[in-house]
Image (cartoon, rainbow, N blue to C red; front, side, top):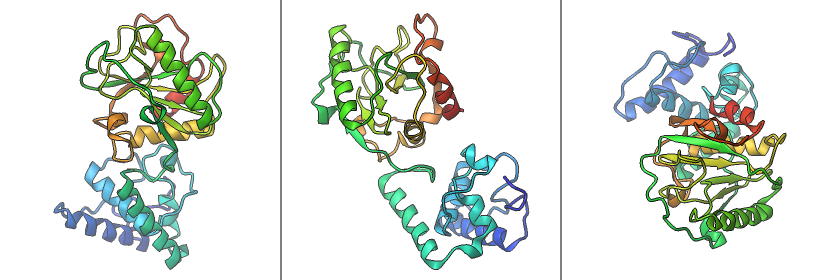
Length: 284
């Protein structure tokens, strides 16, 4: 974080304003006061305190656009540093928009400031049916990133076609249906496929406790900016009420161990090709 933002024991008006707003929220939850709300090194706050800091910053009118190191690393939401440096530049109207934004995020179940909720299509909407060929998935603890080794999929219409095609292909192999829990089109549309409770066949001998993200494409393809944004959104919100219950993770996706398909033991594939660099950028 830049030097002119909040730091341990900061005494500026900006620090006091955010600390006061944070502590009001902590007291309302019975958690008491915390003198340190943001550090200029890596965040070392409990989830409860960080959540209160973030909520306070949004309510005070944080606006998207600042690109500090910590914001890029998603240690604080985009806009927080700018709000702290320049609180006087926030008009009453902007502060009200900030309050409305956090209210909307609470209502739809999203948990972070970075990113807009993507468009969805679901297996039910496409009429896809599944068989439990391999039994229950078990406790979810890991994830895999994939490509399809096929064509790019530009939008929701083409994503629906791809999901139906892959569903039929996977069923024909005796796998009971589409193996990917989420597929993402070039425009960022998310297609929720395999139900989270069903064990699929996405990674040979490694499907217990596994969930899968697939960005259609092949060797040499990279994710679009919209695909990256939707993968990030899933990492931050897949476990929330923003996702239909049959496709909702039981825990935050960032708590899982993630890897590319080919990096699991015993795999003979190049999947997900150079997209692994995009996945790893998001997973880190």
